[in-house]
Length: 478
Image (cartoon, rainbow, N blue to C red; front, side, top):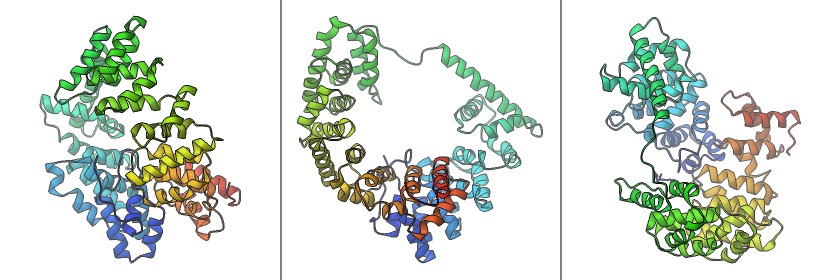
């Protein structure tokens, strides 16, 4: 995964990179040139730890609108020679999404940039998806000939065109082009590609997709291990565990136990997953033994299998293991965070201790923090407020910050008048929704921002529902 260079949390750039609500507030109070430079750096160098689950585009687009920012930097970035030589959605995706939101806000320059990029850019599919939900029918129709011309009139080109139609996130442009009588050549090619997509789907349904293991325990375990010998290697332990559910019977337990204790890597992981899922009497022994090993695939299988359990025996063992400082102890703490007794002081102490230890050793973006943060909120552990505030300020993950905000809403009496106000400007929808319910009405900025969110056509429905409910109640927090 791409590892972005994140500025300190107290700087304007650091706030904007994290998507914190204080970012726009500080940007609007700063020199306009400084604010635009920081904003442009964020858009052109995506700061997200995981772009698949973190939001930024609407957050940055709103700030572009507030600052009346020019789009010259985005234009130079999108039409750089690197874009055609090595098209990269991670390089261009955020900028295209920001342009999409700006086009939705009525910025004609953003709309024209998207149209131009869709016809000439390397990651044109992303731009077309943005236009599909924001451009009018005439604008989309005008793009058809240029985009279809990207595909040569050869069997290979036709196959690529069919692939583009099949994988399009938004089908609207292709439907318009297939029905466009003013461009019969384009309409014929798109129509034929659409028919090919339907035929390919039928063919996939009629034939098996790839190799399958034989119908015996030994064959399944061998198939799992064979995946590691391929190039590139394929991890099949989870798929093999599902296959074992269908083929393994009580008489196969000795073979599976032997594989789970001393088998080759993938076979051992598959057998371990299967036995744990089947609640084998030796499951916890197998997990402890595997977690103490050095084989990463086996250790991961053991910890993942362990964390899916939540019965009384497992919770009792998790109480014993949660004080450990190794990976098994961290997994046990996460189980207690999710399923431990909310009224138990011992459980709360163990989860809070694991949270502090994880932050101290791995920082504010360490793996496994989300479950522990959710846990201290669920356990109503007020002593967690200091470490939660630290995570809220420092983490680069807007998802984890939102989780910390939800825990602070329970653990920190000052949340409503503090971080909740900032959260109204946060980049994450769920965090803004929380703030719409909790932010104190004593801050003069709150009512103005609530009204803005209620009137913003780009705002998510859940946030607007919360905002309108709050406004109809006279602004009192719940």
